[in-house]
Length: 593
Image 1 (tube, helix red, strand yellow):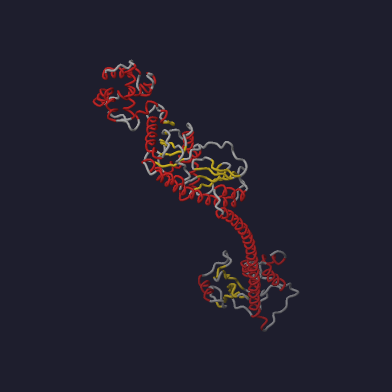
Image 2: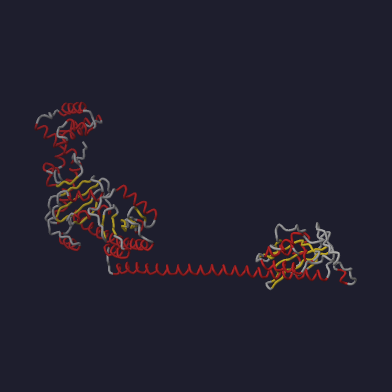
């Protein structure tokens, strides 16, 4: 305590251990009276104003432990008492307080816990009197104060002790009420803050739900109206305000909605594009890559392309991401539906083309082709496509069909084990189909053979063989990749289907028989060397380089060819017949003896 009362507390009381008894001045001493009052010692109590200071101090603090400590420290102010222990009720259990207070005997501790809220005697060695005094208030038991004395207290001392106990209990009640009031205030503040957060969350949910309804409504309206890819991207552009683009599986632009379209659109790098697709697909949602927010269009796990928003300033929020995700889902359904229709149409086309290639009724062929919008009454060409890096599956057949449409070549499409077949209206335009397919596939390693014109459906089987022959000649030529027309084969046209293979084999045997036999016996390649020599126009350097041998080795082989075959390569007639024979051997006989 601060002030005079605090200083008095620390000076000690007269008669207390370590403090001399206080003596009245000699002129004020009175003779001790006999009777009951004479049982009160002169130091029994402190002056009333000092006791009031103790009582006031109990109510000046709101800490329950501090209140109990004050009561224990000043219990001797009301009589010859000593505080042995103090307990506070915490969550239904009696807890010693203060923790650093007097040492408690286990017997005292056990006795207090067995009193169950009532006052009771306690036994402490060396003390003739001891009580455990319950500190009760309106809210129930607050704790205990254990007090002992060397002698039995007088009636006045007992009264003062009881008053201290009641005031301590009252102070504890006030402190408990204050603490609960603070806890209630904190709880009320927490509830108000939680209510404000819930209100803010509710507002956000209402806004989010409104945005989601707008997205669902816009995309549902597009679906109900039968809108396709352009309608979906237009709706996404209106919902977000960002330019929207769609790329195909290989990174080529399909559509762009909004400002800022790149012209020309950059050609994709196949390896980097594939790496990007795999990275976005692994993350499972829209991903930012540079200035774009990208979502993969992937129905049933198959990637059909990407839908992207152009956002160079990174302004897209969660509502934009939500709209992009749902637009990607709608676009995936649309593209999947289109692909299914294309597969059905391709299958029906294939059945018709398969019948045309083997020969079918012309009336039926005309009727079926008209159902697909294809006019068989016009001049037709058979086109055969083979690409080294692509298998001839439905996907490649669709790629070839799209490329043909892109170059203005309406076609019916089917596929074989290693090539795709088109029955096209009108003569193909130069190398346009080959160049378009090279861009679509990302590689020029492809060969195309085109037949002569066909005036009726009945001539298509023969024209198919011509297209195959043009393809084969191109594949076995020095420049094996590109597009070859049967009309341009010249001499090679006589090597086509319909000729007598036995006669051709005899011709080859006449001019190359000895070389073929020699190669078979010695595992040599003299016939192949002669073929390559003619393919290179008789140029020693090019021939040696193409065979990966030294020029001296080439000269040795050519000399052996002259010796074994008996033909002179410098003779014009022999040279022509040998060159034709090597072509027949390679093209018609497949390079076999």
